[in-house]
Length: 338
Image (cartoon, rainbow, N blue to C red; front, side):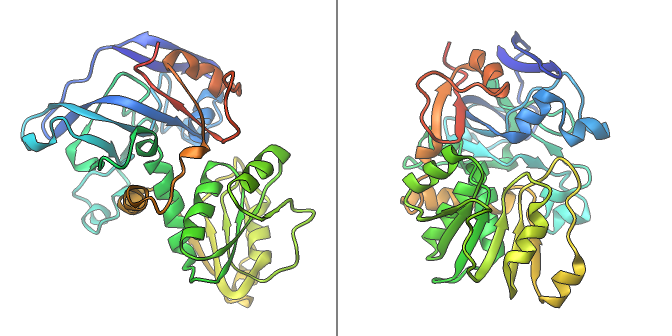
């Protein structure tokens, strides 16, 4: 089968690889759509921390925002899964450690991460093998585009839940990329007054096109009391800025990751009596994201600017946008396309 393989920083191609075989407790999925995210770009450039730590190595097959149809079953898998449209959790815990047994498999010390950690092959391929325990069935109202947005949506929804927003609360989202915009959409659905702070004129104009009026740069951000500040950026300076901006007694949520250490003064945290929440992985938010997409309460499909085949993936990772792409920040890959 065809798969997209990164062999070294800046070096990648579509290769013929052995098709996956469903082992005990696993299924094989025919992949329909895959989202490309910043983590994938960091693997392509060689900047991904797991590479620097030796937790991941080349060659690597990326892709962890995916959807598809189950076409083969391993031993012990209920036959009802055959033919089901699904997406799946990126975080695959060992299942037996203290964290896994407490429902925290996404921070399992021994976990695999699909397309990221432990050499587990990713979804930028015609087929993918994953444990059946990681699957989430998709209703008919969640199409393939939405299905590939469940994983980033789960991260965003967890960030909004971490902010503990109530209707009428004022929230500030730092970063107007895919995760920041998804957070803004979920927060608005929960009745919050949502503001976004970003950098590029294109991303800010796009945020306004989604109906957000409070869209700012750091230079023109108004002096308003924010009940929650959610950092969805990759800027090392913004975690401290988030703490400065949030109202005393309220919450800051950190879901973005900078490429270098980002420092927060815990004296400020304590003196403002602020709750700080860190978010890693979509795992506890996947079901909620599916339900909100299925009901139509949140529809992030406009965020997807274009869809390419596997052969177009390298150019996306290198920073090119496909001809005719829309203004949205997200790009998808369909392995079925030429």
